[in-house]
Amino acid sequence: MSKVIEILMNEHKEIVKFVENLKLMCLDFINHNKIDIEEFRKSVHFIKTYADERHHQKEEQILFKSMVEHLGVRAENIIKYGMLIEHDLARYHVNGLNEAVNKYKKEPSDENKLEILTHALSYCDLLLRHAYKEDNVVYPFGEKNLPKEELERLDILAEEYEQKYKQ
Ligand SMILES: [Fe+2]
Ligand SMILES: [Fe+2]
Image 1 (cartoon, rainbow, N blue to C red):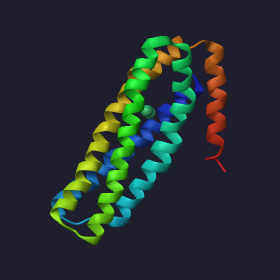
Image 2 (cartoon, rainbow, N blue to C red):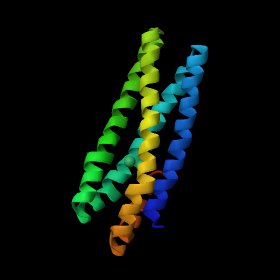
Image 3 (cartoon, protein in one colour):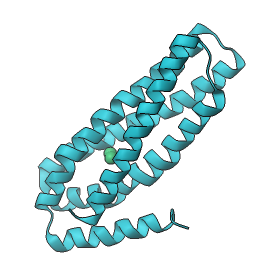
């Protein structure tokens, strides 16, 4: 497996673990009607810094950019009208979750509770399906069809992108 795909798939494992935990936090909120605001804020932070900035933006700037440039209309359709739209939808839900947590802190109403659960669980459902599609369809399509030298170039770019997280 090429390095760039290996890095991205390992990040999916971290994101899926995070999502499973966020689902448990939501269940706990449903069952006990109270939340740890700080834990939800940490979740928002993880989504913005890890799932989005480190992972989705690396896909967008490196692998997906190259697939759109080299692999024609099929790649363009699956990426521009599939994956990138889902990245934007994920951003919508994390911003919604952030606002809902702030509102709930000021006013712990049922309506604000519902808003937290709606955004958090929508994010969870979206990300699980999204990562599955990438692992099983999008990445294998890229790895199978991109020229070997191009994959090697992407490996280097992905390693460079990772450097800023390794200090
Ligand atoms: Fe993605
Ligand atoms: Fe991904």
